[in-house]
Image 1 (cartoon, helix red, strand yellow):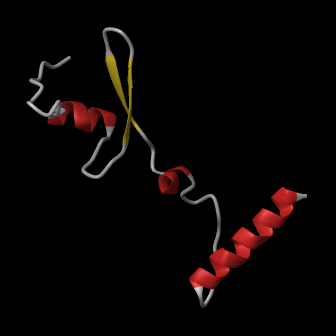
Image 2 (cartoon, rainbow, N blue to C red):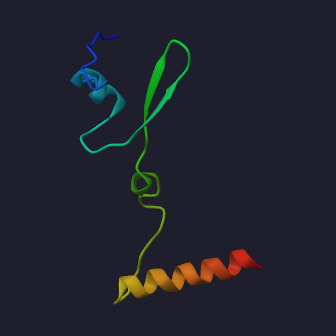
Image 3 (cartoon, one colour):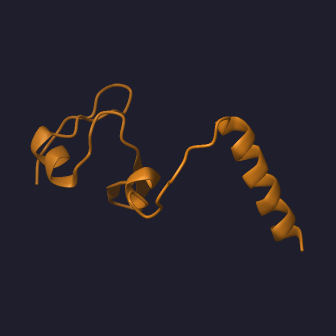
Amino acid sequence: METVKVDEKGRVIIPKSLREKAKVKKGSYVKIKADEKSILIEPLEPIADKYFGAFKITKWPEDLDEFVVEVMNKWWTQKAT
């Protein structure tokens, strides 16, 4: 447990030891919840990390934008039925 000061804009600095322990890095996202007397800050796991290695890509599409649009259209049609 650490004690930190809240600045005039309501910000706090999370001490380095706690950031390292929770694996929070610059640019990371966190979820914040509060109840009557406490505030909980929970790091969010990047989606890319969650699925890293789950899919094997044999060949990248030539036009990635076109590929994404095609995949979304297929997904949307399947969802509508």
